[in-house]
Length: 196
Image 1: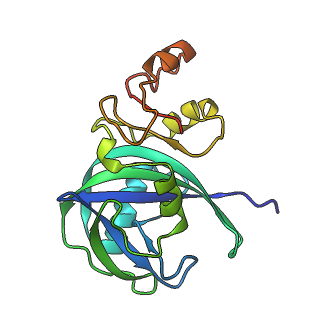
Image 2: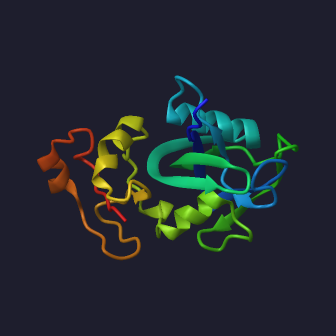
């Protein structure tokens, strides 16, 4: 049977200016730090997956979902290939606790770019984009059709980063609203973006 990439959802949970990371255990990337998340199930929305995974793994609830970016993650040692969909959200209720001790050793809050080592591959690829969750618009959609619409505009296919029209994350930042209008990508025209 032909192998195809799996789709994962990584959830960047923000609370008091920090984000939540867990130390992975028992799977590929064991010992590395990563955001909560997991596989996108068949017929499941990205937002539903994010809510489910965060609750199953930490016992917390989350709110204010914003679609963030995508990474293309090749795990050569374990012969795995993931396309990871990142969403940004805010903490709503609860204290993170280890609900799946076979998959995670601990949860902790960290300031952005002050992460412990080692970090999980998808997080490493995310940081290489110059991405910051604090540049995401509150009304950014958490919708897979957005990804399908914008993918052809990224010459390297992956990675691509979405930022706010006012945000300044890294260098060469601009607003692509006119580009989207010309391309008639009506699903995307309300949201500023940068392609890396």
